Length: 254
Image 1 (tube, rainbow, N blue to C red):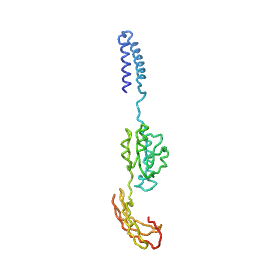
Image 2 (spheres, rainbow, N blue to C red):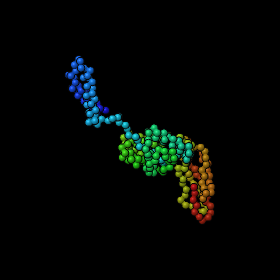
Image 3 (cartoon, rainbow, N blue to C red):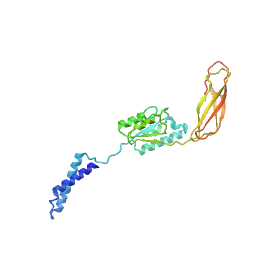
């Protein structure tokens, strides 16, 4: 904008110097027209010389990075509805940002996918690393827009993201569920012994309903225990006796 201001000022100044004293009562209209033409001509030459932009500058489109880690599905399990909802949110943001080129996925590694491929994306990576996406955005000279569930392994890397970068943590609908947080069993036992298996169960943000825990040996159920309903982020420890059948062979428990 300042370059156009200088060009306009030069045009007016040159026109004033050239025609300020040339105007007479009978020629005033003609002189004003010549002064305007001179001002425009000088303005255009000065604008070209100064490199004035032809249009207002536009911000570079962001590099859209999508966290493809499996932690997205923790709240909703592997439910296909949960995955479809995520795809819908990602596509809506891509349209909002007018992303026309490739989108990058971050997780175990950095991969390029098209905007159309988002409709087939299933977040399944075991990690969530963003350093490579930060480096890609810096190399391109573009800000980065990261869509994540908030569980990033190297969050400190985001401090090096280009100016104007954003991180959007998309809300997930919490569902009632519990998971095995820890399992304690004796290091060894003999055939015919009864093991005391201790399991630590933890609930999510919405708590959990009543259920049961089942242990199998070689695909055959060997024990079952009731699990009470849990409040949000609560834990409970279940101890279950597990008798080992007789016989000299190795067995695996699940």
